[in-house]
Image 1 (cartoon, rainbow, N blue to C red):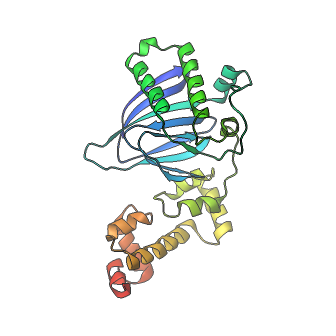
Image 2 (cartoon, rainbow, N blue to C red):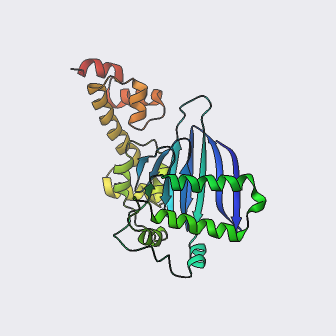
Image 3 (cartoon, helix red, strand yellow):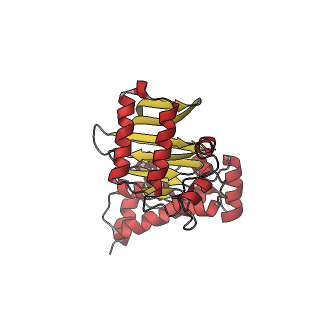
Length: 280
């Protein structure tokens, strides 16, 4: 649940925004023609995309390329709120700021990968603090200041040890990527994602996703994914002492009762009985 949201607009588009989010919450981040730098203050979420299944830490940021992403914030305390700062990197804005040339400090050092985590440093933390000052004093903000803030962010990213080539990364932000259905399924087999969400990560409609899935796996998505999850659940029931509800969650089921019913229907006995009969 988004509790509050403040934004700074640039030429009619949201450029920088600050949100307070109450967990649990799944944020669907769709960036069709823009990259996005997102910073998580109190603690990090789980990032799910066609290329990533990563748990971020607090005071850590991620630079996302165009495409579809899901950001999961799990509930950990009764009053669980997380502050998020998002900076949208529009290609037309970057082109205007650099008139075709990025800063001279930027040199090619290798190929970039898709979404890359940027480990927070004191410098980046101070940059985020400076944005907080302007959110508290919005009357000071104008287009010139926003342009300076985008340039400042780019220069700070250059100095991040996790960014091997900011030149390639920024160029890649707006390059449509070819998503392989099998790669997405392998990455998110045990993620709690619905079929329509998996389809979005593959940049496909639900009907196209089901059709491509059938070609790739010779099975329906629901049947294939459920069978794989139940196989993993059988393993966990045998080698761990985890509660049934924990196992259900770990293999991708949000509802432990549904998991138990499905397990009994597919395997023939309830999870508790399977554990008793197969534990060593």
